[in-house]
Length: 346
Ligand SMILES: NC(=O)c1ccc[n+]([C@@H]2O[C@H](COP(=O)([O-])OP(=O)(O)OC[C@H]3O[C@@H](n4cnc5c(N)ncnc54)[C@H](O)[C@@H]3O)[C@@H](O)[C@H]2O)c1
Image (cartoon, rainbow, N blue to C red):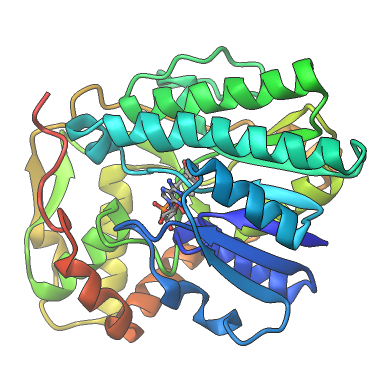
């Protein structure tokens, strides 16, 4: 298939681009190259004759029309977004513009393209979203595809709005969409403002490892390469109009996750051990959701997909990758806001 992938220079988008090329698809990577982007993430496929990069903003309708007309993709996989919850607390405006208005603009461009081709049934608009749209769970229970939306941060509210738009474009215009809502991702090429890379890099530097609140928030961690595989599975086998929850089957409290990374650092980077002495509890994020957990039954039963990487194995691979790829992460530490405590102004 020829795939138009938005946000392909970001963390998850780049994993999808690399896997799609490896599986034999053609890829048009559309990315505005914001602070969160890194073209090195897709350097491995840069020379492939099946790969093209287009620097463009999803809010730019003329650019989206041109790119769709020139490349004529069979499917759009939409990952471009503002993605950092703490940044959404300090500056929600760009989240509204990119995640809501940008998705609307892309949907309209995709709809016009699809109608112009005679509304082919096989076309897909795959919207990639988050489990954060479902709000916060107590100590038990899991999110299913039928869980009511209850977003609680500007980030999750903007993603929830975009999910509603995508469903409406299916119901109203018949656009063949699929949606996915996934749990927290981690792995190689994760931008160094997110929890897991912060823990690894601070441990390496002998700096305090910040843990929000008491570290009791629970997330269901999904290895990014498993996620990319799940996304291509949904794209090719998922039913139009349907959404799929993708989880890692790896629930962990933040404090336990951080201690596991410290233990792996003790083993793989013994300088400065024990690294858990660096753990420092800091003021919690405003509106910090307590627990997210995915019920993965639909992915398993309808599409035969389940994650392949355990949390221990995925963290081991991630720690090793950061230890071996300083040339990738070091320059990113100089980008605006990285290494600062964000999202405490509320
Ligand atoms: N990271 C997670 O754990 C996670 C979990 C669930 C869902 N998601 C969703 O997956 C998608 C990808 O997340 P990520 O972590 O890879 O994000 P990321 O921040 O690493 O990458 C986002 C990419 O989108 C691009 N982008 C931003 N605004 C743009 C615009 N207006 N036009 C074109 N490109 C633009 C950026 O340049 C960047 O390359 C997002 O939609 C996010 O909501 C992420």
